[in-house]
Image (cartoon, rainbow, N blue to C red; front, side, top):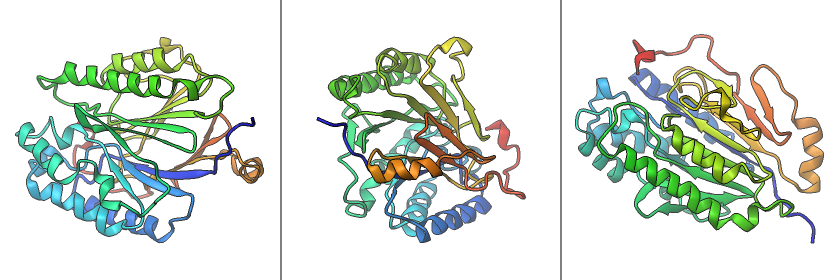
Length: 310
């Protein structure tokens, strides 16, 4: 029995925006541009959290309604996944009310796009924490976590426990598919707003590093593009060779990144020979993951006042 044949697919990632009305306008432009250029390879867009600026919006109902409208109106032809950031919830003046708004308008947001990409698999959500998600697409295990920065709330440690349990549950479920030689799981991608909560990622290492495939963490919170082999609070001695952490640009500074996972079909392997060259704004990991910053930081970008303090 040969290895599974997977088609190439791509997705977009952005985060930490819009913080201002100008950035809201920019986000609309960014999404419209993506909408007008969607290909059969493009599967979804994921926002890694901080969909507003808590200090200035005060996390009012209309801010969540606005986000719902922006994504559904400007990008109607590509499913959108949202995970929370601290500015959407725990840094808000009333975190409980903010979370109610999140549940009302943004929870399981991809369900607004049912039937748009029929080949997207079933998205599983954690029973005790519905914002945590997981699915497998073309041999890639994708996990989304509520891993926020900002102010610690009373449920912080319990939330980390839930995230650890979710990673463990997914790893156990696909254990046979992850085994060396099966080829059925060839990459794990973890989406999280921040690297805060180091024990979650240490657990991920314990559960995943024994397998022959790499793990890629895509996060926000830092506002500046960065690639590293560790995460904040974990340190240089993380010791996981098949691991990369990518921090996305703040959405007001740069367009959403497009990440392409090269397939394993003969056609995809042929395309890989010429399509995986690096440049200033293109990074390639493990010879099959291509990260395109689509031009990178704008020459004149929009920046909220004191944005680095968020």
